[in-house]
Length: 384
Image 1 (spheres, rainbow, N blue to C red):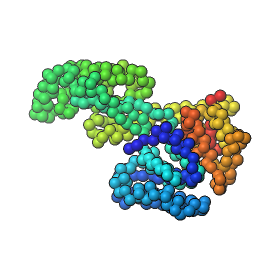
Image 2 (image 1 turned 180 degrees about the vertical axis):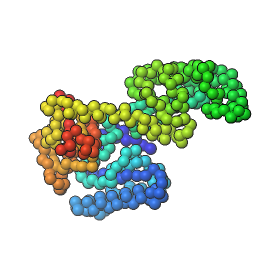
Image 3 (image 1 turned 30 degrees about the vertical axis):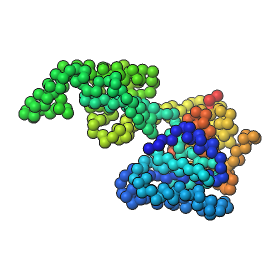
Image 4 (image 1 turned 135 degrees about the vertical axis):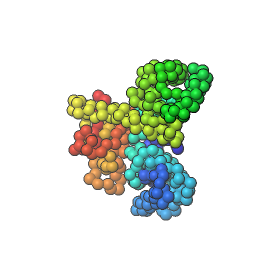
C-alpha cells in the first residue's frame, strides 16, 4: 500500500495545469460492500460529476476522455478493488495521473480547477506520528517502526535473542515441557506450554527481557518517540522493569501478538492504545488558542491567509466537511470571499492547508462542535 509522502504531497501542491481533477471516495477493506462493488460504483459516479464539470467549462470530449482514461482502466481492474483501505484519492490532468489508497476516511468529493484539492489529506501530516512497536513473545521478538499511517519491520535479529532459551539456556525449555506434561495430567493451566509463574521463572524472563532491551536500546537510545509493547499482559510489568528506554509507553497492546492476523492488525490495535497520546498535542494546541493573547490568534480567513503567506501561522484548525470559497491576490495580500462557489472561485481552506503544511505547521480538520471558536470555520494560532 503506497503511503503518500510529504514530498509527493508537495509535488501535487505545486502541480499547475488546466484542468486538474481531484477525486476522493471512501472505500471498504472487506465485506458485503466489496462484493457488491460499491466502491467502483462510487468512483464511477464521482468521475461522471467531474466529466460534467469539465464539459461546462468548455473542454472538448476528446480531452475529457483522455484525462479520464486511468479512471476507466481502474474501473476494469477487479483485483485492485479487492485490496482497499479506508479511502482512495485520485489526481488527474492531461498526461498526469496519481492514485493513493490510504488509511484515511474521505467523504466522496470531486474538485475541478487549475490546481489539486489536498485538504482531505492533511490528517497524514499532523506531525509524523512516529512510534516504535515491540512484538514480544518468549519464542519470537520483532521490532517495528510506525506512523499513524504506516508500519515496517526494523531488523534486530542479529543483536537480539530470538527466544528465551538463547538467553537462559535450554534447561528452561526442558522444564517447560515437563511442566506442560504434568499440568496436562493435573489440569493446571499453562501459558503457551510454559510452566506457571514462579519467582525463578520470572527472574529468567527478566534476564531474557533485559537482553531484548539491550538490543532495542541500541536502536532507540537517541529516539524521543513512544515505544509500545505487544505482549502477554503478565509479561509487561517484567519488561517495564527491564527496559531503559525513557519513552516506553505506560500501556501495552492488549493480547498475545500471536493472536493477531498480521502486522497491520497489530498496528491498528497499537494505534487504539496510543490514541490518548496522539490526541494530547491537538488538545494542547486548542488550549493555546483559548489562552493566548488575541493578537496571537485569529478566526478571520481574510486575516489568516495573508498571515500564512508571511509564515506566521503555527497551527490551523479547519472545520471538517466545509469550505470557504473566494480568491487571494498575493501581490495585494487581499482576500475576496465569495458567498458561494462560482467560476474562478478557489477553496481558501485548501489554499491555507497546503501552505501551512509546506511551512511545517500543524493543520487539523475538526468537527464544528470541537472548533476552538465554533462561530467560524477557520481558526489559527500564530507563531509570533
